[in-house]
Image (cartoon, rainbow, N blue to C red; front, top):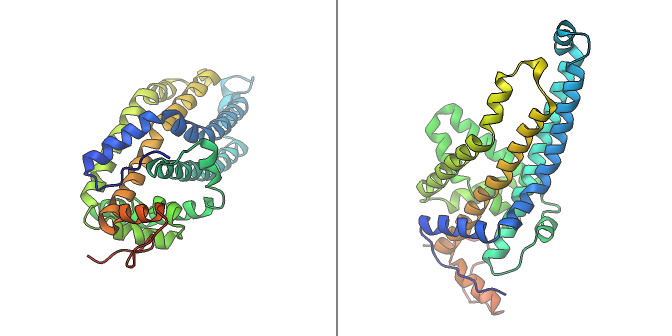
Length: 289
């Protein structure tokens, strides 16, 4: 077992450890992220290929225009879009949950593999999707009412998924627990979100925007399957490279908050020694100040 460095960290130390962990275990996190998004990539390519074959018949420009506006094609596109969205949520939730378990194992000095991380996801897909849905609903209402409450709620619920996965709590309790842990640390959470947003924009500008511009400026009849393939591949690469960083950062922040507020480092030490202290708190219990 590797040595465990459990101690309160500053925001800079959390971010430094995030990128260090990502760099030293790049293939682990890239592998965790690539499997579900590879399925989504193949689905999108198949959907786009089918759409192109139906939208561009051999009857000339007029026939192509008529096919483009046909009810069956529109219905197929809507149905395919809904299926793709649901599939994306399920696969993204699985990848995020597996990444949380991998980060937790590495942070606590255990070994982690792609297979072992996904094995721990079994039975947790519904929970992580429930947390994602409830978080989106709460934050969405906050943004509808006013922008600032939405941002605050986004920051306060930032560790809800790690809570749900590592403490085995339901969506509602996970959000409540996240609100408790992040109390007094909303600004640090906001800065993490801001950095990740900038990182996402950079990745999008490098991998996705060039192909999006090509697609937007190409005429429908001149679109090639190869161009659509490259556009989907660029999105896949962007998700695999950048996707794990956010989950790593918030999982480490979850542990940092527990160390700061609940003396999790002492709890873990006592557990590793096979002993307990008379007043030790169980995982998930907030100690009095």
